[in-house]
Image 1 (spheres, rainbow, N blue to C red):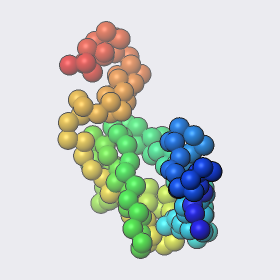
Image 2 (cartoon, rainbow, N blue to C red):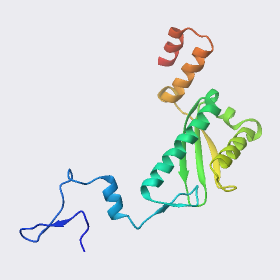
Image 3 (cartoon, rainbow, N blue to C red):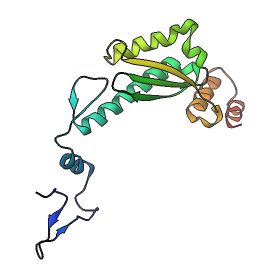
Image 4 (cartoon, rainbow, N blue to C red):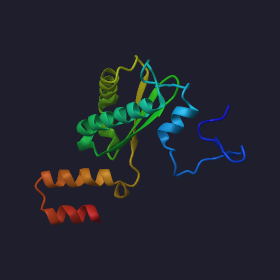
Length: 167
C-alpha cells in the first residue's frame, strides 16, 4: 500500500516522490499522514483534528492576549507565553512592572487566574499564572508602544514622548 504522496510511474513501475511544488499542501499532508490521529487540547475536553487544534489554540491565544492587554496595559504588559503540560496550563505574563501585576499579597494575580479560569472553562487548579519581568525594556516593542501610548495620553508633547521611546 503506497502513501498518496508516492505514485507509480506508468513506464517502469518505479515509485516516484512527487515534485514539492505539485499538489502538496499542509492540508493534504495532514490528512494523509495523520488522518486517524486526533489531538487533545489540554484546556478542553473535546478531541479535535490537527487543523482545528491549531485554529483553537490561535483563537485562545488571541483572546487571552486581548484580555491581558486590556487588564494590564498600565503595568507595561508585553506579552504572554502559554505552556501546556498534561496536568495544567501555565501562562507566563511578561510585563515591565511585575509588582503591579502581582498586586498586594498576590491578590491581582489570583484575580486574573480566576478570570482566565472562568472565561476559558479551565478546571479548578488547571491553570496557573506567573509574572515575568521584561529584562531589557528597550528591546521589547510592545512595552515601548504601551509606554508611548501612556505618555501621549498623559499630555506629553509628541516629540518629547517619541524621543524618550527612541532613546
